[in-house]
Length: 396
Image (cartoon, rainbow, N blue to C red):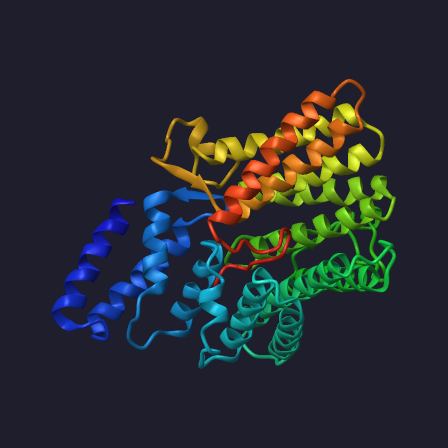
């Protein structure tokens, strides 16, 4: 935080003395974007850092690099201000891979503002362009990054299908849109596995293809660090597994849901997972165990998910509140818009368990009071969290 405040002071000096479009001001702005991208978590941030982030992405500045435009878009979404991207005309980026990833960000922003039709079209365009880059035979690193972002775009297309299914109140979870979501997620999972095979990072057997269910995912484990794209692929794989597990549960197959969600937890264990990712997976495991008539286990998962949120308020939002347990508490931290939305969803699912549990009606009423209170606070903040479970890749 001290580094960010120092950069802000330098930024103010250069802006006032040389103008915001000067090369020096632009260079400091770039440094600030890099710092914030590395520091701001999906889960939480100090109030001052979040405020600094918003002023940075809202700042009018000179000519930016492709990388800085991507960082600015990413930070706008993380901070819950997707409207900054939607309201802005499509930015011109020089590199085709950067242009395609900006489309992924625009799609996420459109989904956050509930424009599902445009979001789906934008994700489809991104998927097509990323596929072309991945198959172009260009730089191997670009191929890997394009394939990873393509999997995120495919996953998000499926998320939009499911959102539209729910908004249209289709009577069955086996509806056409839900079927589209399932098939798209299977295609996205195939992309992550194929990319791992391409990089020589596939462990444990050959990918089978076809429609994937949790029991068929053994061996689709990815290795490699950030440089090899392993972490990015694993995060997207976990997103897809969570979505598959959630839909299996909704379709009346909670045991298959549990298999997918347990695999997602396994994958997240191989990366420095954000608390919001862990909380979502645990929440869906709680719902699956509830649907499978295992109330005690379900409550344990819901409590664990809420525990990550509690720790995230005092930690850095990364690595399960590790900073909190080590006593490195951030001053005046708050949950991110994504984590706030997840907290409301977790509490709501926990309440649905309590209402089905004999002699827990009073607990249910207390829980619903908290749910409604937190939902109202989120609405009054006028933030735009992305739809729960949607993939948001880091800037390239």
